[in-house]
Image (cartoon, rainbow, N blue to C red; front, side):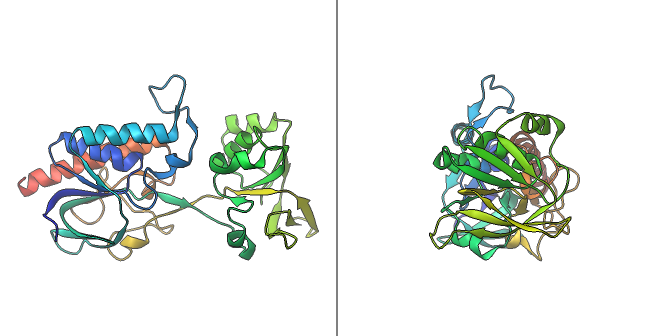
Amino acid sequence: MSSRRNVVIIGSGPAGLTAALYAARANLTPLVIEGLEAGGQLMLTTAVENFPGFTDGIMGPDLMAAMRGQAERFGAELIRGNVTAVDFSKSPFTVQTDEALFSARSAIIATGASAKLLGLPAERRLMGRGVSTCATCDGFFFRGKPIAVIGGGDSAVEEATFLTRFASHVTVIHRRDSLRASKIMQDKAFANPKISFAWDTEVLDVQDSGSGAVTGLALKSLKTGAESTLSVEGVFVAIGHTPNTSLFKGQVEMDAAGYLVTRDGSRTNVPGVFACGDVQDHVYRQAITAAGSGCMAAIDAEKYLEHLGH
């Protein structure tokens, strides 16, 4: 058993690293367990143009590297590794990784959310062979090729717009007859000559013609029932996210969608356990709101530890 920590932070996206910065500045010497996706979803992002203070934008990985360095400068300890089990039933809490067991007086959960998939058998088989959930990671590979984006929210429209930099044409496939995306995103997409829309349409299958690479999509109209094929060489799935909370089932209160429930700032139903970022936010889901909630979690943890007798 490692020595007892004041606070263990699970996750290292904007929420986890901001929590680490504030906890470190409060002399709590936080331990951050980075998780499988160190740096969170921003590591999959190119230019971040809406994070305050960066007039010309900043690359996602660069922003995360700066946050990480700032947290370390004030004494946060970051370790690579993935949390495999936690026990929040008694204090001190225990947090288990593949390689070690940590004891913690308080815990901050910042495990984020992961992209949802359609659930088609071919989807996983062709992942990385024409199917992707990250336009900024894989767009380059589809230079001059026709592609499809599945979804109708901000992320789908944002990805479609981004992909026009590379693709010959982008078809947005949506189950409804209107987008959920914000007005400014919609206007941008509608005005882009390289984007077209397949409304009221369901994806039945991803086709590869036996080649092991995407050649098209089998589609069905939800209005007429008519089936058709769309020839594309890339498919980007942008239908939402699932919170990374399976680790905490039965220990921390969740809503129906699996997001952690927080009250009075970042407090969960377990005293001493706090949550921040996309793991508890399915509404805003921005880097800046994740960072803000990470700050809240660290301050709440500091107050909790003061009350315990630091």
